[in-house]
Length: 116
Image 1 (cartoon, one colour):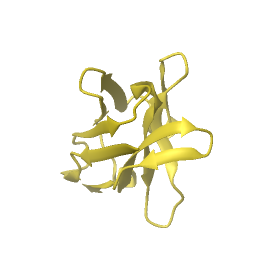
Image 2: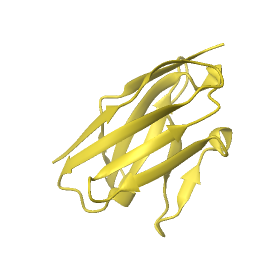
Image 3: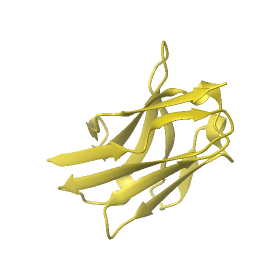
């Protein structure tokens, strides 16, 4: 079993910043398998940021240059630093742990609201 606990969401004005945290516990094989997704109102869930098999970072085009994913392996925690936030970034952000294709764990989600 894997437990994922997100924190750091909130309300921010456009242009502001937030940092999300995802604390992972349980049967974690690799913290590199943790990524961030989001679901905006009326839209499908999308991948925001994650780590590639080589340990590099990967981002959705819409957040490149503004968001940064990082990890603290000692704490089994993954962060998402979000800068220059836009109203279209408003969504529930979810932490995801990928065990294998089609086998995932999800956090409870944290709301990010960006006002214009």
